[in-house]
Amino acid sequence: MRERRASQDARRAQEFEAFVAGAAGRLLHAATLLTTEPPDDNPRARKLLTGALARTYASWDRLRGEDPYDRARKELALPFARAAWHRHRGHGGVLRHLGPQERLILVLRLYEGVGEEQVAALLGLPVERVQAIHARAVALVLHPPREPAPSRALEGAPS
Image (tube, one colour):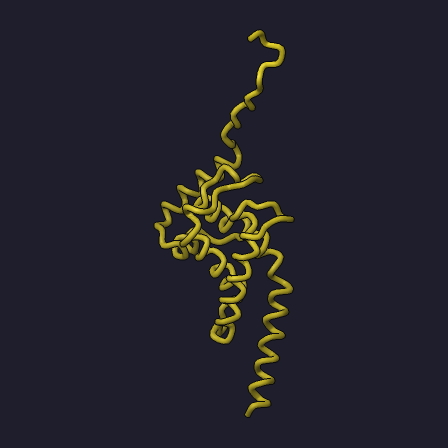
């Protein structure tokens, strides 16, 4: 009995390791887009990914035909959605002008290829709201607001 359980645990661990080897890079990139951190210095994105993978592993035996990548993406997006609306301001990159909700919807729709209806269901929003936020986010990425001109002290100006 113990040997069978140990064998099942080892197989489960191997399956999960193979999944992580194939999916972690893409999920980390999605998390980095959400947090707008630089790819080489992204502690908040790594924390999001670690939590998502831990929750996915905890439910690994209960997936029963569900796509593990979909589950991991959901486990990445939901905590960001719940906690990040007010905490995750953009730091840089092409998504820096977007609010957290706009970033989340844009990343799910464009980078991850998730359908509007799925995003709406995941976030508990009407499809029309997802469409409007997505359209606004795309417009902001394509036509970002102008940066204010840097203020400089006038050199050689008479005092």
